[in-house]
Image 1 (cartoon, helix red, strand yellow):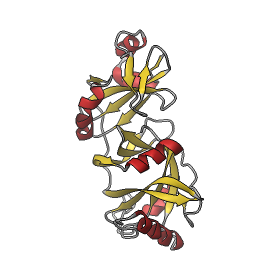
Image 2: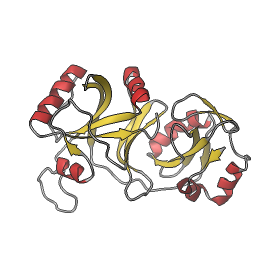
Image 3: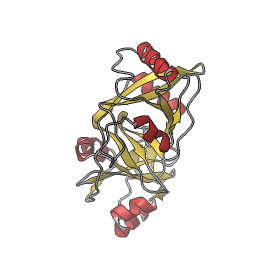
Image 4: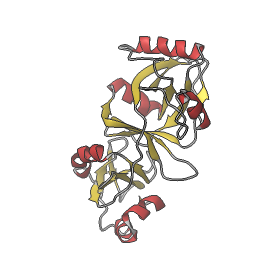
Length: 257
């Protein structure tokens, strides 16, 4: 009852994929890399999830009802830090290499935000310096303009959940935030933002994510939100940014949890 997607098969090769599907290398029982509860490849549909770094990769398993079989790019540092825990719970390290593009320096803050009378898990993205349009060499900050072109929408009020943006998702692995992923035209997702080190999130935030199965991602230009020590202050900063027309947002599904 194992699913190996075409993207995963392309990375691990037909021989390894066929061995998995034939049951030779399937783990039997495993801990789902998404919901962290037990699974059984012989009793329930199971997805193969390949976490790929620059030099190595880890093949993990998840309930098919949690996430589909997919390839998830992560940094080599993140991958090596997770190898012990993943391989100890039904993962398999395989020799695969891929390239991960360099990203602009972005600050990401997690918090709970009240939207429409319900608590919602949110991420707030703010660059550490002005973002110019790639290839122009200019100094004009076009961060919000670039995000709008990629599916984010202007946020005039925090009273409504932002619309989904196709191709975007949030990657949580082992309960920690690893990346914001983006895919285009059916291609495998790549890390638009990637944590230098897997980011710990509060238990309450993770519980809210498990309930909603989505994350609200808000973005503002450099210097708009700042580092807020409390969630009420973060909400106030978001409200000010929205009122000033300096906030965009999108709701994103999970690529893991």
